[in-house]
Image 1 (cartoon, one colour):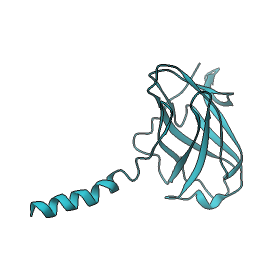
Image 2 (image 1 turned 60 degrees about the vertical axis):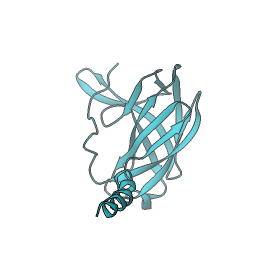
Image 3 (image 1 turned 90 degrees about the horizontal axis):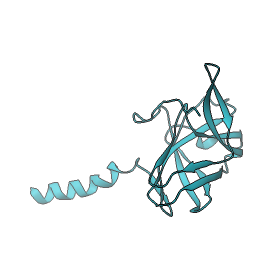
Image 4 (image 1 turned 120 degrees about the vertical axis):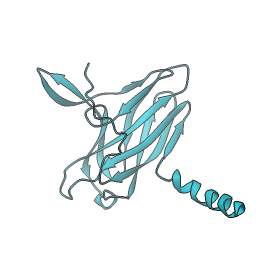
Length: 159
C-alpha cells in the first residue's frame, strides 16, 4: 500500500508544478509569466511576471519582443492629477537582492499590432523574449488565462 502511495505521489508531483513556470537569466529568476485572455478583436494584450534578482548587482530590463506582435513595449501606470495613466518606459531597473512585479496597474509588457492571435486563448502559451543589460536574453513562455491568477497583485505603481 505504501509503495502505491509513493508511486502515486511521484506521478502527481510534476503536475503540481506544471503551471508554476519559472525561467532563469544569470542571477535573475522570472516567475509565472501570464496574460489574460481577451476578446478576439482586442487590439493589444499585456503580459505580466515577477523578476527576482538574487545577485549582488542591479540589472536592467532593456526591451522585450514576441513573434505574436509587431511591437512589444515596457509600460507602467503612474498617477497624474488623481488619474491613472499608462506610459511607455525605456527600461526597468531590477535592484540587487530585490524584485520587480509586472502586474495589472503596475509595470507590464504591452504587445501591439498583434500578428498571431491563435495563441491568445485560455490554456495556450506564447514566447516572450526579455533582453537584460547584464544577464542577456531569456525567452519565457507566457501562459494565457481566462482569469488573473489569485496571487496577481493589482496595485498602482507611482513615481
